Length: 158
Image 1 (spheres, rainbow, N blue to C red):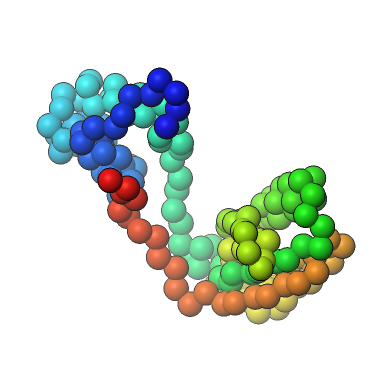
Image 2 (image 1 turned 90 degrees about the vertical axis):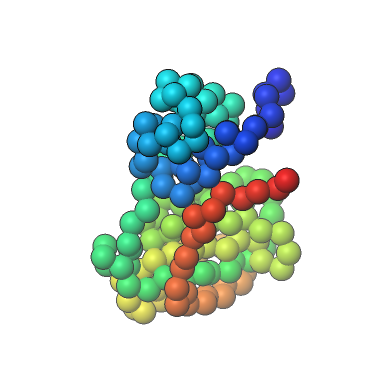
């Protein structure tokens, strides 16, 4: 929470929950579900955005329909861990169309990449050309993803 930011109340949490479940809902529908006037609901949503609680909106797509018939998680270990190397690795890989997300990790591996590719040859070539060809990479391990689900429930810590 940012300094001077007000604590979230139950209405804020309800709004967040509804938006997390389906961000395409209209303000009028959300206001109705939480028992507020549409203008008050919109004001709360704008405050949640201004306070950095809501950080953006994303479109979810079926990558299989785009030609991404294989998804994989690729663990990467670097030999060099200075800030510039780590930052450049993230920047370079995140710009590639195959990379859906990158997790910078603690522990045995430094990164976990979630990728989607058209077929096994594409996966092989991606690993060789985009990852193992990099001088700072000293270990790569690839695991196929059979299914990928994302929770529609906003995390709760109270």
